[in-house]
Length: 345
Image 1 (cartoon, one colour):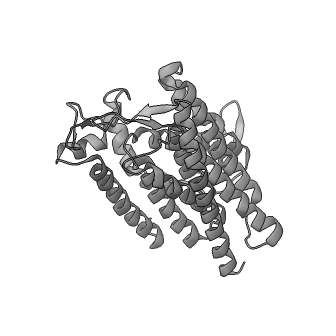
Image 2 (tube, one colour; image 1 turned 90 degrees about the horizontal axis):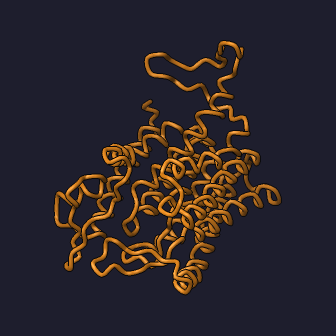
Image 3 (cartoon, one colour; image 1 turned 135 degrees about the vertical axis):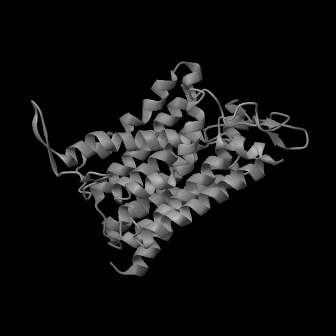
């Protein structure tokens, strides 16, 4: 397809996702406050109450962006996509968002155990598990490429594609969703990290000609940037689990649809550090700091988050802590994109 038509489609997806999210958020913020659906901003000394569940608007904006791309494909033929793949990925992300809303309403502190909370995205991975994705064989360190077919005792010959769909896809969606749900709690942190990673995956998808992955990335990017306008310090709205889980699901979906699994794993490097730190406390610690009247966030006595490490090395405000983490993610993203672009692995 002509490149101008492709670029126009992607830009339209971006702006539609941005506009829908941007228009609906003020309404949602007001309604949530009126209904007392709020959360305490733990990193502010005066502990203000902030409207919750802003991820719903990101969900709406992202959906609108995807629908526009489908319209461009179906009626104007501006782009060429595998509609089955795109709809499967879209369904997974939307289902994760919906389950995140339920989690926000009856979350693990109100009846759902932590291990049940972690497994929520598995059900949302079903649409992606149902399609046959013909990604190239995976290279296993020290062993080489995984065979196309594997003989399982008492069962017989099983294609690696089936194993990929039934095992690796749900692991990827669940792992990424819970990763982005761990490093959270500071104004602009979750959406900022998601926007940087989405931008990187969009750039990789475009260089590799993976249109479905590019559409998912740019629709999520448009919605996240609009959300950041209201979530940046001082936040007027929190995203909740509906946002954090959805960001992770979009990263996993983009990686799966675009055959960018290695890229996705590398981009989550900071989250792996967060996992190690949180695991020391059995995932029972948050990323909050101890706020002071001057606005400085002090690190708690324990170090259970990347945010705590940064708080411990200097006198930083919440905004500065977030900016440092986003800068680290941006540097990591540039490195990962360079590795991909120059085919260094």
